[in-house]
Amino acid sequence: MRVGIVGSGSWGTALAIVLADNAHQVEIWARRSEQADEINRNHTNEEYLPGIQLPDTIKASSKLEQVVEGKEMILFVVPSHSIRQVARQVSGYIPQEALIIHAIKGLELETHKRISEILLEELPVPLHERIAVLSGPSHAEEVSKRSPTTVVVASNSIKTAEEAQDALINQHFRVYTNPDVVGLEIGGALKNIIALGAGISDGLQFGDNAKAALMTRGLAEISRLGVYMGANPLTFSGLAGVGDLIVTCTSKHSRNWRAGNMLGQGHSLQEVLSVMGMVVEGVKTTKASYELSFQCGIEMPITQQLYQVLFENKEPRKAVEDLMGRLKTHEMEEVAHN
Ligand SMILES: NC(=O)c1ccc[n+]([C@@H]2O[C@H](COP(=O)([O-])OP(=O)(O)OC[C@H]3O[C@@H](n4cnc5c(N)ncnc54)[C@H](O)[C@@H]3O)[C@@H](O)[C@H]2O)c1
Ligand SMILES: O=P(O)(O)OC[C@H](O)CO
Image 1 (cartoon, rainbow, N blue to C red):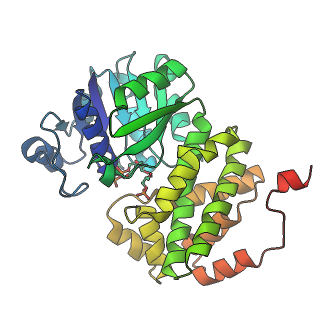
Image 2: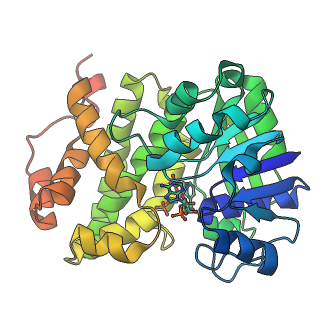
Image 3: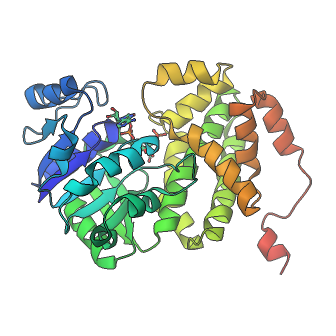
């Protein structure tokens, strides 16, 4: 297939490798022309995937419309804060039968919308059945080295999900399908909040019990909001739920964990973001989810404490004390009240 990848950060570039390995014809959009030149000339993307040699067949361009024009498959892999503007810019240039996959893990800050909801608003109606989301435990650094990785694609159309699966699956990159778009998007976006928390906990040197607690209770509040929004609870025990939570809370590759770790060591949010150089989706997602939790009347204690740490200068240690000092409760409220 002729494939256009919108976004040449670490994840867009790693997915370009997967697709080039599958003999697709890949063109990738780079915001800066020097980066496109580097990919075309040296077959590297040193800023985002240092030390990785890209297949020679991957082409790059800094002309956004050109990257989607005439393509049979388009992947959107830009940070969540830019997807609406980027989708709007290319909307009129995408062929009407193209398969659209987004691999973005975040929520729109201003509207709290999921990425597929934004795509439905910005792309023409004939493309709506063609939209799929890709999620799951998948650090770009490992995918680009062809380490075994499993992911999941969801779409409202099973045909679309299966087409995405067929295009992406290979010996190193195993792709499952799932019909639950809401579950995939909520799981993928909100695990970044918990990874920030896990990084803080490690930065405070709290140990493994604390991290396991954050991951487990984090999954409980992610599922609570997700189910309220229409997700299938089973999705959260799958790759896009617990799978991605594990990898993001425990891997040295995670930007969210690393950012949290620095916060736990006493650095300010501004300092942390200025040294990261790559998107830390969990920061904006914490704000969007904090607001959503009040809007929907859903209890999300970890998200609420993290919001105070990130945006109200609360001491991380005090946030942990407040979490531990909450009123006693049942592990499974829903079960206890039946
Ligand atoms: N890196 C991973 O391992 C990984 C894995 C799965 C999902 N994701 C998700 O993929 C998405 C992209 O992440 P990434 O890791 O590739 O990010 P990145 O920080 O490595 O790269 C971001 C890319 O987007 C571009 N960009 C930044 N601001 C932009 C703007 N305003 N408009 C247009 N383009 C802009 C940058 O130039 C860069 O090419 C995120 O939602 C992330 O959560 C990342
Ligand atoms: O590096 P992070 O924290 O953005 O996480 C990357 C992926 O989402 C892991 O699946």
